Image 1 (cartoon, rainbow, N blue to C red):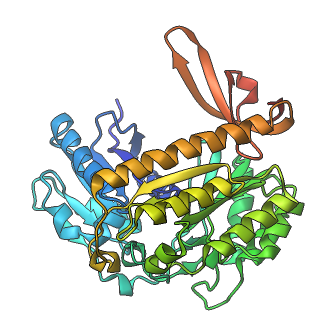
Image 2 (cartoon, rainbow, N blue to C red; image 1 turned 180 degrees about the horizontal axis):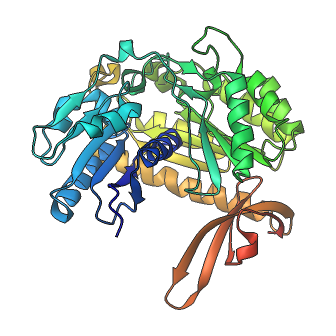
Image 3 (cartoon, rainbow, N blue to C red; image 1 turned 135 degrees about the vertical axis):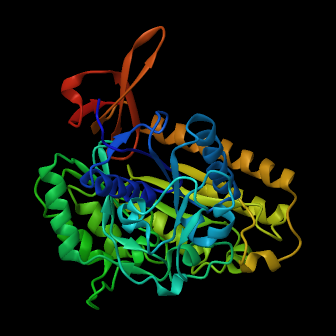
Length: 426
């Protein structure tokens, strides 16, 4: 039997969190920890939290209770956005031993050396204004696609969002560091890199004060040998310049796939949200993408039930999305967040109405995705297959992959296709 201490991780939230969890895992493995599945018994459990919605907060508390039932003697560490925003609240959850804020999460190994089960929960956090450094992170080994963090924090003041309070000011890695990491990932066998950040298009000034635009980063990455595919995880419409769109349209490595937050199709609501664009700009971005790349997938974030959103406002959003040539929607039900301007806006939309509007847009998303997929039936497109398998009691093991334009393909498992790009007739 191994005498190593064991650690298990669970990640809530965005791709950026996944990249950071993977980095924390590697840090602890170099300290002698053995990584375990979260469902197994481990000496230490680390939960990397999100706090975009109330559901993420609730899920964190539920996970701690599960650990308490399964392994009450194990150490429980909470980090991530929820930990930065509400450390005292988390420390009060029975079973939590350590709360690590934004400045301390990457010092986890040192904190674990000093931690003993049974002591009162320790909080290691600071005011978010004091957080200024950039910690490079990437996921590796967890899935075929690698999430590479190149930017953190946000200087925007959207009225519904607590991310700037959880992540701090916008800051970035340097182009040279990101390129060096891409070379390293290629040597490790990565085929596809997803560029991630809190406000990715705001990639710019690094810790040394040097400045480079997001366009400079993607043009530099395009020349890295060994990486077949890049994706841009999410980019604000006001930061998605014509130059970026035109570059992606001519690139062999940047996939024809954009994810562009909209949040509302009503200009009145966009103003109350303090978004930095209007729907007309969004429509222009979609039109240019489709003009240059008719086959391009476009995903959209949208929030329903924002305070003061009337039936007319929601109909405006629905009609706008219906008219756009987009591929799928990520629909979020508005959730009240402490210390946000949106809490002062009245009237509040009833929860039942929010859920009904969510259902309506999810139905629209289903139809959009079906139409986009059908439009490409019969085409041959490059598909990168993943290592993960899916089995059922009455069928063979299956594997999944994604085409360049983000159409999911499922087929019986073939080992020789794992992490390979295969020309596939859809």
